[in-house]
Amino acid sequence: MLFSRNIKFLRKRKGLTQDQVAQSLEFNRSTLNNYENEVSQPTIHALLTFSKYYRIAIDTLLNIDLQSLSEMQVKQLEQGEDVFIRGGKLRVLATTINNQNDDNIELVNEKAKAGYATGFADPEYISQLPTFSLPFLSKQKKYRTFQLSGDSMLPIPSGSWVTGEFVQDWHQVVSGNAYIIFTIDDGIVFKIAENLIEKEGSLRLFSLNPLYEPYDVHISIVKEVWKFVHYISKELPEPLLPQAELLKTVASLKRDMSKVKLEVFKKNNQTKPD
Image (tube, rainbow, N blue to C red):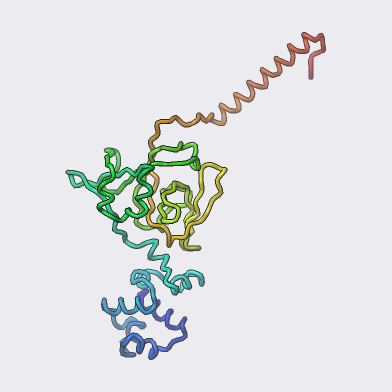
């Protein structure tokens, strides 16, 4: 059981004896010994007590092998920055439903973005957002649509409506995929993500537009993650020629240029060029 392994690891890491920890927690030493050696299972009260004492979430104590983490990660936990539970905890998302009790897709336009920073967890604020539905999306998943601004994700143009699927566990963010990331500091951004949660406790965000440099956001300031599903735009993207067509075009241009050169030489009574 990871709980037994973890509390023993944390105690020894602090250089404390069972007597010292038991006294601090107001437990009998035998009770603590039984927990550390899996002789008995912790009660809810015991779990809450250990969580408060070590400043680590109960889910982390139960489900994360602390000995397998890096020194930096353990220090973050000990400082109260439980990036692992922040990355994987169950979140209560404010949402709206239709007459059939199905989740709506709420629209967050450019004007609503400022209010979203403070109202994202407020059911009353969310209920005031316009809603719609798309029949081809799963009714078993939660979606929300955000209006894109700026040119960092070109060729997806500014003003496009980008729909995302709510990501409950941020550890499931797949590197190389596109996500809508909401943070208090940066607001709503649409980026390609690299998952560095386990290594560095952060996400590295990339733009499609190469003029923009990638940057990292610590998972502690991330509030919501939405996996990109599709986008809607009134603008057509710039056409991109396939490689084969591009090569044909270049070859054709070279032939045309040779013909032009030949005509110029003929007019000037010069010999045929090499």
